[in-house]
Every structure is written in C-alpha cells, then in structure tokens.
Length: 83
Image 1 (cartoon, rainbow, N blue to C red):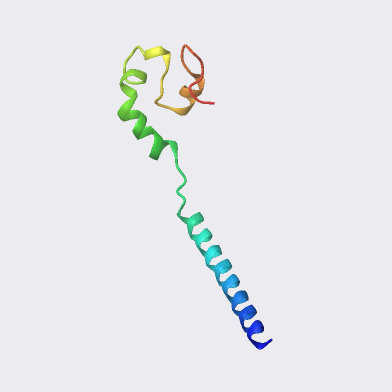
Image 2 (image 1 turned 90 degrees about the horizontal axis):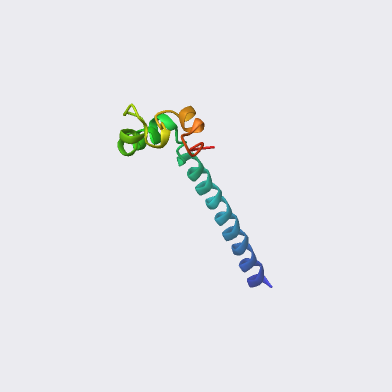
C-alpha cells in the first residue's frame, strides 16, 4: 500500500511538472510570434520582385499596381490581387 501511494504521488508530481512546463513553453512561443506588417515585411519583397512590372513603369503589366495595399485591392485587368 505504501509503495502504491509513493508511485501515485510521483505520478501526480510528474503530471503537474509536465503541465506547468508546457504552459511556460506555450507562453514563450506566443511571445515570440512576430506580427507582420505590409510596410516592413511584405512591401520590400514586392519591391524587389514585382515593382518593375507592377509599379515603377508608366504602363503596369496587366494594369496591376502592387506598390500599395489599396491599389492591389483595386486590382488590374483581371480583378483584385488581394481581398
């Protein structure tokens, strides 16, 4: 009986430790998630890869301008680029 109680106590300690360790990891993971912004994270990629044909030239390919969010929502010849 005494051995059974000792094992049960250790099981409870183990479960509680695992629970709190997992909670701490989830909290750290939530804190490390970076919120992306169009200006800081997306626009530089579009500028490097897309502005030549869809922004800097007088005649935009497909009528689509990707320099600003509202221009992408307006879209080009085939409609909005983003919704």
